Amino acid sequence: GAGVSQSPRYKVAKRGQDVALRCDPISGHVSLFWYQQALGQGPEFLTYFQNEAQLDKSGLPSDRFFAERPEGSVSTLKIQRTQQEDSAVYLCASSLLEHSPLHFGNGTRLTVT
Amino acid sequence: GQQLNQSPQSMFIQEGEDVSMNCTSSSIFNTWLWYKQDPGEGPVLLIALYKAGELTSNGRLTAQFGITRKDSFLNISASIPSDVGIYFCAGQPANTGNQFYFGTGTSLTVIP
Image 1 (cartoon, each protein chain N blue to C red):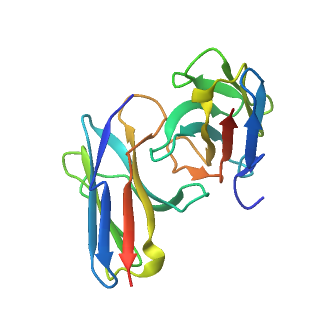
Image 2 (image 1 turned 180 degrees about the horizontal axis):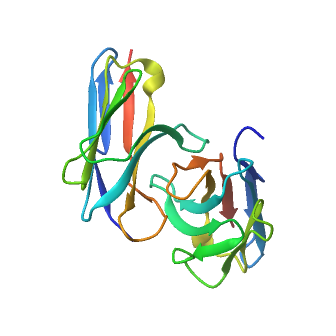
């Protein structure tokens, strides 16, 4: 596709439910990033893939957060046993090469009630 | 993570005025990026900078990579109503992998 595609655009989960957020990067982009953006804040780094390898997951806030990119293309961010503090916009970005600029999707807005 | 200090936090200007905003870090960066984010959308890349001292323009936008490699500046000339939005700087530190850190944003309001 022409840009990074994320689904769903909106997700409402009851506290304790598991959620899965999907990211389709720009075709051919090697690197894929997940960011979390709280209201009124800048994006905060969560994790980064180069092809299928997860090279950095230092930003994941707890072991309830898990990301995968098994075939080096589509990625899924999974949050288990969601908590209210998980409510945020989750942004996915891809880049053509290592150190190239990031191109973002429109994000998934997660609301945990 | 890295702290990027972005200022000002918000700006209210008259249409036609010029705008300046900046971003500073506590450590040396290899790359600086500037993004604009509209409500409900993801950040859109405006300008990328790769070299200390580099000055790059994109239409009415001009950005500079500071010589110390710890700061960057974005200028918007002759502002128009569609410039409204939140502007973010992002930097990639030297020797710490591939991640980009983001500033806290500058909210720009243009009064017609």
